[in-house]
Image (tube, rainbow, N blue to C red; front, side, top):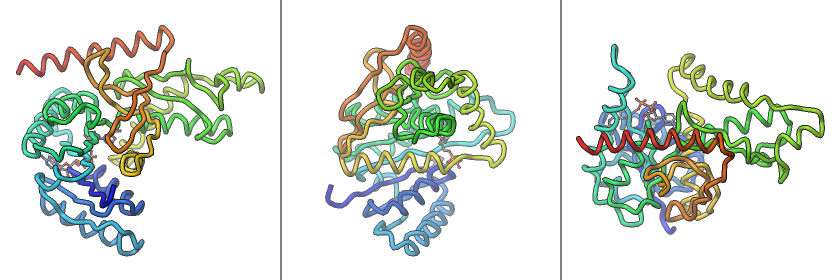
Length: 308
Ligand SMILES: NC(=O)c1ccc[n+]([C@@H]2O[C@H](COP(=O)([O-])OP(=O)(O)OC[C@H]3O[C@@H](n4cnc5c(N)ncnc54)[C@H](O)[C@@H]3O)[C@@H](O)[C@H]2O)c1
């Protein structure tokens, strides 16, 4: 890619952290920040520009409009609304659906090679709707999905096994949230099944405890500091890098699953045109049943939404 332009739409906690991480990574030529709140947007531009100048980043950070964003090479959607007093999760979900749907209408048509990265929650549902409304091929719309969850869980296994995270092949898959599935049956260290590798040293991984701990970590971070922007900001940067440099890194991201007719996370090679190849993992029966149940629930929600 000659001159890479990235836009971030919604520069609150997550969008701001992604802008900071992308600027330090210094591979984008231009970074456009867009927000419905112009004061916040301009403040983020000034703050992140300071980081750009003090780190000698090549990335030029500036404020942009939705139309300008739609002509960028990568568009990251991090818009969201916060819980209002007395609001239920369902009300918040519908609020986010409505924000994202009107945003995509305002932005379309997109540059034909653009890749959209949806981060806003509920990420799989929104990524499916964004793809339908964007007019872009499914391969060019990606959801951040369970990428952060996979990285976090791998980090915890690293602490236990003392094996570097890059040698641990372990994925969290499916519909991001309560019903995501850890693919323990396919987890390996090097090429050896993880439980077998540990058994050699008489060690045992407590799958249930680890799952409980990595899920609790999100809740604990949010309770203590209100948001958890740094991990996801880095994940967004990693996705942008794989796209811009056509690295085809295999990452657990949300993408269209013909088997279920909706988006959910499975490993996929991510390159210049988005999803270059999907690598669905053959799960064991219990894991597959759980993944399949949550996909069916998501699909029926989507069918209900499309009737409105
Ligand atoms: N997928 C993940 O792993 C993951 C992790 C963390 C957060 N998230 C999600 O990211 C989203 C953002 O979280 P946050 O903490 O940054 O929220 P935030 O409230 O700090 O930021 C949201 C921003 O979106 C802006 N916005 C709202 N409507 C807009 C519109 N129509 N056009 C442009 N901008 C608009 C707001 O002004 C605000 O600046 C949430 O949906 C959150 O659940 C996802």
